[in-house]
Length: 201
Image 1 (cartoon, one colour):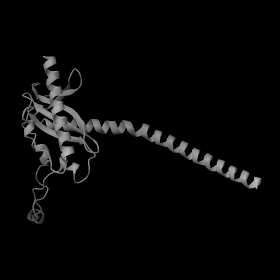
Image 2 (cartoon, rainbow, N blue to C red):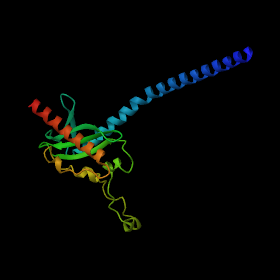
Image 3 (cartoon, rainbow, N blue to C red):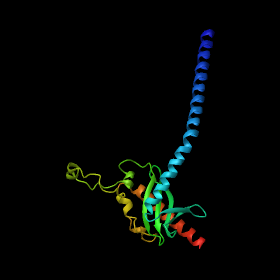
Image 4 (cartoon, one colour):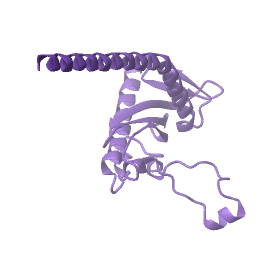
């Protein structure tokens, strides 16, 4: 009986040791992969953010970082200020919703792009939903997909709005939390930009 117990203890120790080694090797591999891929992920995020700035502020030919680095100044070919672009975020239903927002010199929104979100498919993801404007006849005639990419219909509501007129933006029924988060993020970003610009003046 004692021999059987000792044998089982030996087997248990062996399994614990093997499991511990497997966990150690797995953790090491994960750390190695993370360290190698993280710079590439960050580089892709920077490229996406840079591309988004030109999207949300169409008249800009170049961008210059502000003194504090919280927003970007969009300039035309002559170096004149076209407007500003800034990143803002807010907690949605199931993720952090990150946006790039463009405004003109009068504080009116010229464009919005969702940089990242992980909201519920079919509900919260309606914040990035683009309405189809092609018909079955367009598909038959081969005309589908020839028009320029459109802005999501929910985000289109923000165009031309400023801090005061944001109240006119309607949230999405069935995706109230996600769409309200976008609204709060934009308002927060506009208030922060306004404050920083007034301080610099």
